[in-house]
Image (cartoon, rainbow, N blue to C red; front, side, top):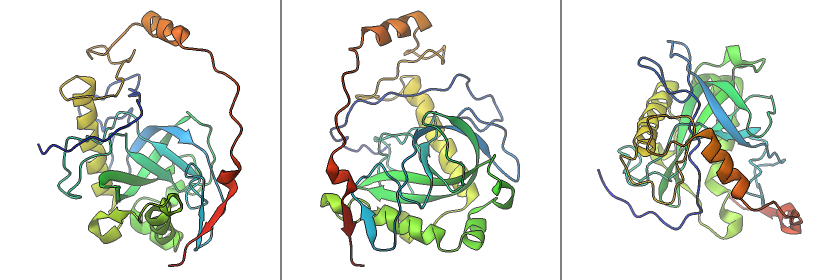
Length: 264
């Protein structure tokens, strides 16, 4: 396994699900894989939206723009920073897999939903592999019409191109270069995306089992009973209560409202 240098990072917490995948299931708090779809539950961690046009990039990187109304992640996945991906040639970004929900329903932060996996984009973010999986909420009124990435091309023309363009340029306002992509920016299909999800689930299992270096990650959990990081609910409550109380919110800086224009 190729080793990569892991840069300075803020401490993150691994968020294991309450149940572990059984043999024959897809994992990640998952439902069974059929020939038509893969249902997966996921964590939602951002509901930001902003308007955009072809030449506009918002200064607020937490607002994913109108291209995808939700930006979330799959629990029980991990992009291993010590493993060089054979497809991208880069190591993982030390995060769960990110997903982009193309549906219309706006969910709450932290909400767990079921989705259909449609495809994936292999973003190379500052030299790290950062998969972006395209999905649709199974409760979306249009969900039945989408089963693979070609359905997105047909039913939402220009959508994938706009998504690619946003991920390519969204860090430019911070003075960073454009992002790169594996496969020349081609969106891979559902089967490829499912394979990627399963492989990163295996990395997560190694992480939560302490078979690989967790680095600064906090893998403490109350749900994976055979994990070395397992703790009781009482111990977890003690940790939570020992934390400092939240102070007053900092005001939102006016810089987040600044618009940037970037000539292609």
